[in-house]
Each structure stands twice: as C-alpha cells, then as structure tokens.
Amino acid sequence: MLNFIKNILIELLSVQIVKVRGRSMEPAISEGAWVVSFRAGFRHRDPERFDVVRLEESGTASSWIVKRIVGLPGEEVSLRAGELLINGEFVADSFAYCLDPQVGNFEWWLRDDEYVVLGDNRGSSTDSRKFGVVKRGSFRGRVWV
Picture 1: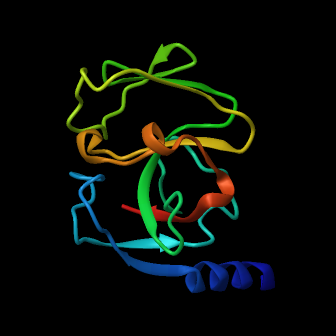
Picture 2: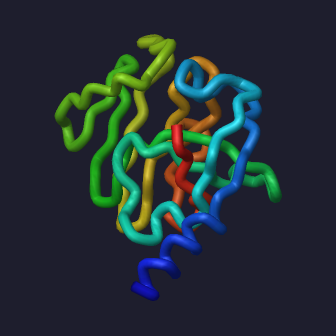
C-alpha cells in the first residue's frame, strides 16, 4: 500500500502545465494551447508509437518542443512520399496532417535507445527529418493530449 501511495505522489508531483509554441502539432494540439506533461511519464512503461513527448530542442538549451513518436528502437523507419513505413511495412498514421509527397524521402535505422519523432503538421515541423534521431534520455515528459 505504501508503494502505491508513493507512486501516486510521484506522478502527481511530476505534472507540469506547458504552453505550446508553434503549429507543428496541429490539429491535435493548437499553437498557444496548454498541455499536461508528466515528467515521470515513462517511469513505469516504455515509450510507444504515437505517444506525444516533450523534449529538449536540439542545440537550444532550455527550449522545449512537443512531438509524436513514430519510430522505436531497433526499427527501420522510412517516410516515402509522406507515407510512414516501419521495417518496410506501411503503418497508418492517422495523426499526420499536411502530407506533402514532394517533401522528399527519409530513412532512419534505429539502435537501442533511439527514437524518431515527427510533428503532426508535417509541413510546419522541425523534427527528426532535420535533427535526426533522439535518445530516450532527451524526453522530458509524456504529454497528455
């Protein structure tokens, strides 16, 4: 019982309310929206495909971004003509918005502890297509949408 209470307190104390800057997660999360971020969000479970995470922006100290996980450790992840493929198989990504088949093709081969993150609004997102894969240690919270 004591462990249960301790875990509940950790989850409650790890909550942060964060204001979203930018349009990269529209339409799921609008610019200026406030979201709940759980700093201990992956304490009891591994990140899963399509989880939304808050992470430190690459190359910018104290700046945070919100993205969706699309690729998991050990996978081969591709974007071809705007379509998501995992290990060569098409995966329906109902969150993707503003797909542009002219954007180009991308491929990532993920090692242990590496993830591909993308913004839902693919036409207006700085994500793994620009800064590459991210390590789990870069996640600063799981975002509740």
